Length: 125
Image (cartoon, rainbow, N blue to C red):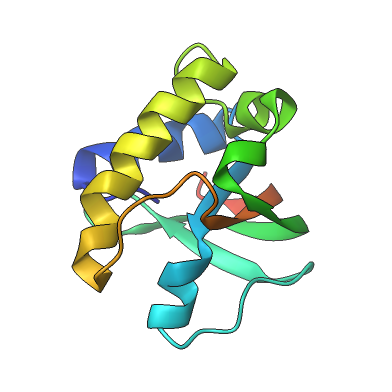
């Protein structure tokens, strides 16, 4: 998760605490990587900032949503900052502004996001 070792560690801590139970990614990123979008039941290994595996999550829901239609409820379940929609919107816009140019895109209000809900099914003890 994230685009730096520090962000990976920060988000991992939220996941392991049960605070972060949702995430989103740009549909453009999936298309650029020629990956099939997430499906319910998909498993993912989550690593820390040193790329060491720390837990496994299972996707419990995926909804494709334009950036400008993400709900305050979803923002809350992302678990970051003060969990407000305003925080989510500001930080995610900044994230996409940093990462999307790598694939030749710029953030847009109507860009499609894959909004994922998940649960931890295994974690290092």
